[in-house]
Length: 95
Image (cartoon, rainbow, N blue to C red; front, side):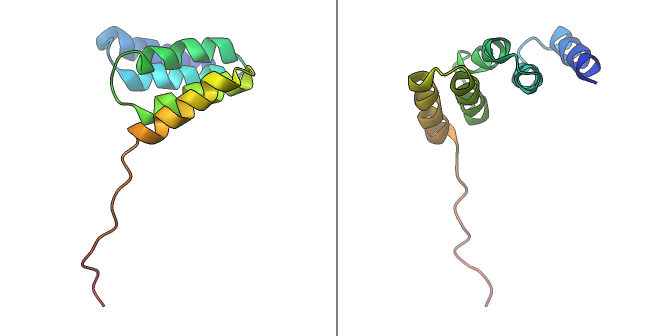
């Protein structure tokens, strides 16, 4: 299952090498296989791209935490919080 998904993500990157979701998903595949250093590599590609991707920052924090890189994990978790847009609740709810 992992190998097929990995092949699909690489195929997607062959079409669009800037597809952040594929890098993030490759990181997730490696994370769930216990390959935390490898997942760090994929998540870092997204975070270092300069885009405000809170999910990738959070996931990178998880990869750091799994490797006991706690200071880096905390930094990523804080960054993820700052990059995540929390929707505002509606103000005109019907009674």
